[in-house]
Image (cartoon, rainbow, N blue to C red; front, side):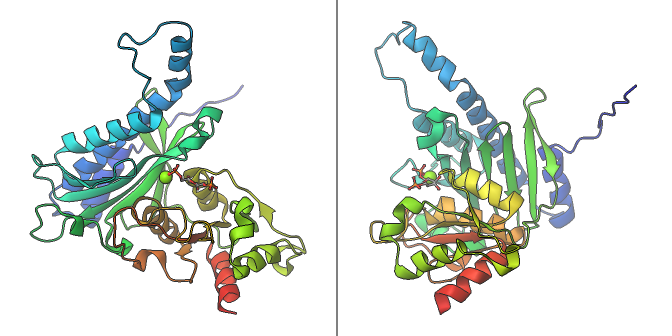
Amino acid sequence: ESKQTINTDLVTLTRFILEEQNRYAPHATGELTLLLNSLQYAFKFIAHTIRRAELVNLIGLAGIINATGDDQKKLDVIGDDIFINAMKNSGNVKVLVSEEQEDLIIFEGSEGNYAVCCDPIDGSSNLDAGVSVGTIFGVYKLQPGSKGSIKDVLRSGTEMVAAGYTMYGASAHLMLTTGHGVNGFTLDTHLGEFILTKPRLRVPEKKAIYSVNEGNSYYWPKEVQDFIASLKLPQEDNNGKPYSARYIGSMVADVHRTLLYGGLFAYPADSKSKTGKLRVLYECFPMALLLEQAGGEAVNDKGQRILDLVPKKIHERSGIWLGSKKEIEKLLQYIKK
Ligand code: AHM
Ligand code: MG
């Protein structure tokens, strides 16, 4: 006879955020707490929309055509709309940077004190194959006295007050940091709540996994070619075995695996993408902050700390290497040679 126990004292994201505020900022206004609530609404809405997407399209194919004859909006655009509306209506956001919007958005009616940078659906080329995609976000507090301007976001990553991502996979997984470590939540779709499932997550110190688009190796600088080639040789610190390769092609999913299992994820600059592919404000910074807060590291192709970069434009790109501490050490030894 099996005894089933059920946890009747769940830590929901809302509870967690309130408790964290009481612990670290008891005199805070609670504005960031409200903003994080609006963010979780956007994640739930996007998660729900992605789950239904294929079926909704199938209905379209079966002959029920949109009355106006419009093309069905791509999920990228829908995700962006959901995110912008959630931030606009939160009342706490003054400035928004979205990968899908060329210009910075300033919410004129808002009295909010925060700026949010986001990639609403990262990895969207994978969507049709049902591969995990995600929303990446980073939050700045407006500069003192600012009424909302580009200066509120052209700042180093060390100044972000919160960052994370939600991966839409078998479940929706939210990884969050407010500068006090990393905590992981899983969406219980029936409760409609993110539940704390990975408290105080730490990235393993080392793991013989590398994750990079090797199809670009022809374009890589020599030292990157040599470094990755070196990982394919038997390793003293890996029972004499070479590294394993893992590459999903969806940053959120590749970083999620790296956070949980350890290893190295990279998207270096190359002769085709001279400044790299991934964007500083809403791809590199949030992931770098998460990795550091979990005990890992994130550097650019020169070995400089990602979080110390200061972008000159909102869609600036950078080469990036992130992962377990020991794996980044190996890289640094190599590029300093
Ligand atoms: P996107 O923002 O247009 O979706 O591109 C970002 C994605 C990342 O999720 C992923 O790490 C990378 O592009 C994969 O690029 P590639 O197909 O060149 O390997
Ligand atoms: Mg992206």
